[in-house]
Image (cartoon, rainbow, N blue to C red; front, side, top):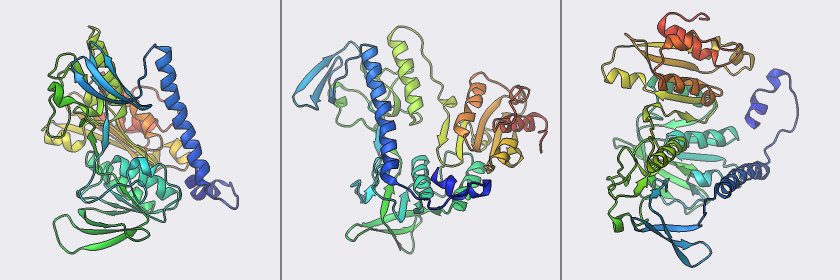
Length: 409
């Protein structure tokens, strides 16, 4: 809201003086939202007669969890089946100690007491770019340091290039193919020593706050897996079969603790399918149709395969693209940076992947998710009536462009 007020309102004829950020009020609103949502889950527990035990749990046997209670003391919870849903933790970097004051994780980055003048983000994945984008829009000078040659390596290459250009236009700086080799927190701020990923001359960059977002790791250590013989891979992910059961009968695992995309909505689907299996029914999660969203502005959302992945598989394909500059709603709201890109199989026209950079892309992507889930063709979406004016029309036009020709370009 602040960024829009600062950069767009005057252009739309809305004038004011003395615009400022009240960070404590902003944080209070965030805390209220978080508090309300978590209390909502506790309410659902009560409604569904779920016993909520607060403490740190460890597997004591394939049917028992010993819990060190938050209020002191301990207890043992018994069950015929156990589901491990411990999620993931921030991946640490060697030599970089997260203190949540000057060197923060994404958790600390959501609770800063003042807007940092200079913020350095280590890691150009989803979380680093989202947090970097938030503080950048609030006025921080943001520099993103990334070891790899590209930001968000899982993203479609063409969309990624446009996305990076857009972030740079918003004054975010990128230092790619760069590694952090030293950290000095002895002064007021933080001094980072950097060098090229391939080796070479070192440089020093200063920051008030450093955000470490080099990815996430499964939270599977110290929960008693070894004591009952549950197998994990080298990355610490719990190995499960298609029914989400581990190698130990009666012990299941879901979400970030097992292989697959580390996303909350994927974990939710895992959980539902796992319980369906335990109940003797059938469950299913298709990891190829799990959408991913980068919550920057504009958002970037995708589902299915990138053009690079389709090419690598040797599948003959067609691509359809539609720029937001030609979309009525995007032009009317003066937020027309971005595009929709559709990749479809050449012979059958079956949609293989959809990639959207647009305001509200995270809402629009679900039409594409449904299309992939049901094996739809680009013609199916192109021939479906879309309300005008909406940004969603850009997906229809991109599909038209895939199987024949878009109308509005």
